[in-house]
Image (cartoon, rainbow, N blue to C red; front, side, top):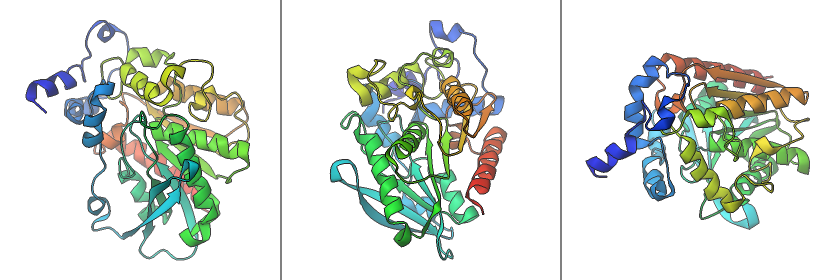
Length: 339
């Protein structure tokens, strides 16, 4: 990409531009702020539909060798039947010395519903294979706008059913089956948990929702606060939801399995872990979803990290705030998946 074009993409990533730059909003954590300009070169704050091809290259996951090289992890490639029987890829990660049935984690990657792959943002989830001995399954679900709702969410649900049906051959304990996702993947994971409850599907022991993309309506204050700044702003969110839902975005006919913030019944769901930065657009919808779970009698552990931008643990894992987030998440996973 030409230098001028990249400058235009990253402009405003730290300071913001235009009228919205003057809105009151939480400031970025100083250590994270230093890295934001670098992040903008790979992930511009504003993603429009003409940038989808660029993002599919820029946000592609690392090679498998980079993910597991030098670690006590082996990977097996499998194929499962997605929505309408379409064959889709799944990577299954196990500890080299694992034996017997182990807790199983289905991971749904991030990427705004439009980009990313089964290796995107997988670094932190891979750690659970070594730390907890889990069997980690990361899947390719079909992306918008080529595949609009219900394809992505039904691909994820099909993967969950496949994982439960093949638990014995995968080496997974059915009483320790958990779904996890980040950003768009967090929203899809929450939707799959709702669908599993409503359809009498696999019984989950937990749902790990990292800064989840839950609401297509764009009505929260945090959505307006982060416009043209940070990682994944208001316009990016409209681009993602528009790619998935088309003209239905924001209207009355959106399924809660696609946008879980639309759900009106949140009882009888597995315990949830939700984390989000205070300096990102998903802050308010994440807090609202945790509150709704509590009000429905459910269990939810919520962490709002001060000054954190969207997905800061992926883009700046070395910072103190990221280390705290990762450690807190690991502690919850250990409690939920342990005996």
